[in-house]
Length: 81
Image 1 (cartoon, rainbow, N blue to C red):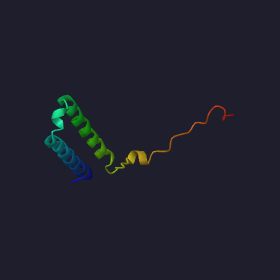
Image 2 (image 1 turned 90 degrees about the horizontal axis):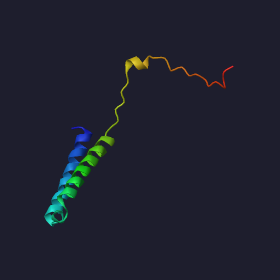
Image 3 (image 1 turned 135 degrees about the vertical axis):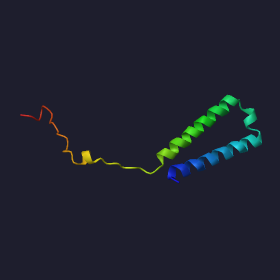
């Protein structure tokens, strides 16, 4: 399993465990359903962003760019004579 999948599984377990605890405590019955749904969508989106941002970085190189010459630098007009 990749790092991102393990992170997401852990995040979802924590999130749904907290949601279940709030439901059992009766806290969710006092909050309108629209706000609960909005908070769930925001928290899930935040979890996905965190998982992708904390994943390992992949560096890719292309062979056609590796052999290309460096770009030509044109000096500003004040430096030319």
